[in-house]
Image (cartoon, rainbow, N blue to C red):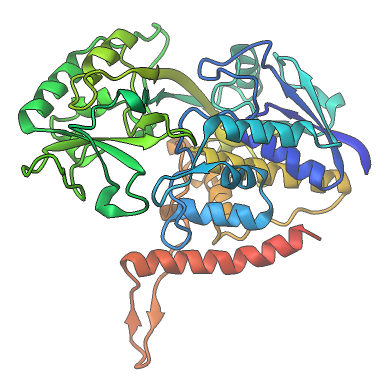
Length: 451
């Protein structure tokens, strides 16, 4: 065991993964977590790696989806977050959804019971000085105001921010099944994975009108609403055009209403939120409507007239730094190389992406303690493509949070046929080619970092 400790600030998914990877390499870790002394606007429990929606890990298709590919790379690399997600998963078709409480409880138990991990419950209001040695900042997009201000000062105000919204959760027993029905889109997965609530054209337009005119949460004068495109509030999507939602979360395709021969004009889907299946999450219904308005407007949806809400939607500010300008290839702050950043504060978006950056930061920090040169993940992998997004300084001014997707992978050009002609790979074959290439290369990287 190496006596020198790495200090990890924050016990979200990135911090928990980073701490685990360091400790598994025989190095002491001290996690500094402000809860329960202080809470962010979105977190409600004392558990580590707390989630705010059930299907936080999205698609689990490793063959045709970049998110599923990242799941598989993380599994093979020995990720704590993926191990706990797999042990607490609930049915969700082709997605990986978890029982939120069980998941965070399991992560917390693993972290708290590791012999090389120490937990200190305190809020740090400034970046640690050099006496701390190796430090990983994994405070997430909801970094406390005092620490965020010190980070801003340290990085010369090179930061950006956007707003993220949380979807409501409904008690399943309050859903009216004389109007709603069970079905996954195109009957994928288990037929019980999703509950569907149909709207006719007239019902949809009445709903849209109320949605656009509903009373919203006010922003402070100094705040500018700059949403992440992958998580727009439902009412913001509606404001972009009356038909927007019928091509988004309320699209009716792939569904057949058993209660009515007429095809629904729009459909609201509710996804399983806990293992007992007593709670259902309104898919794509993240919102900044005021609580009373949420109840009034969402009860206009057929099947939800008497809905009881276990959690209403909310909104919070997310903060991230300009990583390509500020961080080196090992996620170290260029001005203070003993400090690394990990998780969503770096500008990755999504829980599994956050955990993957935590994994890399933990591995890089462990290498420095051991005096070893870290091996960077291959560029063609999900790990490598996520890292490249964070450190590629060719487009600093337009840097924005990014989910893992094949668009940030190196392009696959195509292949030569038997007669020597060039054939471009398209569609699902193209996605499969990206995944096959990545999984081939990630195996070699895992062998190297496991030595």
